[in-house]
View 1: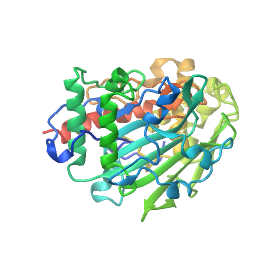
View 2 (view 1 turned 180 degrees about the vertical axis):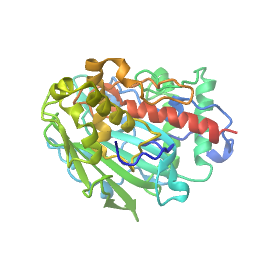
View 3 (view 1 turned 90 degrees about the vertical axis):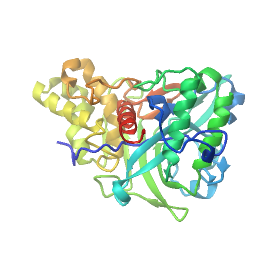
View 4 (view 1 turned 45 degrees about the vertical axis):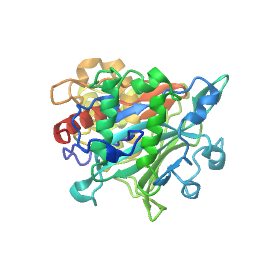
Amino acid sequence: MIGKTRIRWAVCGAIVFALSGCSTSEHSRTLTETVGASDVSFLYPLPEERAERTSLLGLDAAGRRGALLPRALYDRLPPLDTLASNEELYLLQRVVGVRLDPCFPAPSAPGGCLQTLRLVVQPVVPDGAGLTTTDLALHLFYRLSGDELPVLLQDLAAERRMAGIAREDDVPAGGAHPLLAREGISGPFAGRLRGWILEHAGVDTLFRVTFMGREHVGLTWRFGAFSVEDKDLTPLKVPLLSVTEQTFTNHDFAGETFVNAGTLPVSPSTADVKLLFDPSRFRAAPEAAQAIAIDNALRVENPDFETPESIDCATCHAVGPALHLARVSTGDSAFDRAYRRPDGTTPTGATVTKTNELRAFGYFGAKPSISQRTANETAAVVVRVNATLRK
């Protein structure tokens, strides 16, 4: 079975936002609101008008903590794309998603985790009269301290409630924040949100950068991560492996199945689920072997069992499409051990279906792309926040 399976509340990531057009010192210092899914994980709606692209935060956007990702740090990243240089991509990179996490795993931190604000960044590019995204991503992790997280959650949840928007248990359909969807990304809430993010996120609080790049467009994806120390990047080893980068390859360009698919290097996690990456072998395998592969993949999606410190990047991103394809062959009964909340319900909101759709939270072209792992993490964060932070 997969690697270390210590039950932990920590989540594969989370990201955030911040709130209040005024200083947070003018607001309640505690969390009294009941938090919902869109308060901790949300996407910006992709603008329909090309001119609105710059309404999305760029990497050079700066507040009192400095730029979100200064050019000097960005230039130290490995090449992200075979079709465009990092230099060409820098000004195209835009924040498309935000997640908050009260306990992102950090073994060296007190209690083993950090309160974090995570920004999901992708190149947003012209597509006819509108916009689309490139299948690349950066995740920028910022450390929150003191009462920053409760204050941000309080303001975000209060703003939603005062707008007459009900609290959701699950990621909203399409992942967009309901107020951003209502008012647009140039509306008043978006303006306040921009200020809140820049109040808390910047190079001074940035502690980790992760990336998903591509080599053969639509065929090979590359994953890696860096810690940020003294405003410099240090490569991190991929969990369970001794390397700092890992790839996933699938030679089915259409994303309908898997062809010559798998990770390189192969991790113990991949070995446990690799049957799912060979559909013909999976269909011919005994039912017991199918069940083992599915159960192992479901553990990867379960934030109670696996965290970003215990599972390798490529496997974590690839099991969602693999499980979707497996369900077509086996039906729902094989998925009885999927993650559930304490009340027994299964989180909804995942959209990933294509086998070449390795996005966890963001966009696949112009389509919102949300993995089941992210839906599960979001549900776990909502439960944890309401149980432990709310007064």
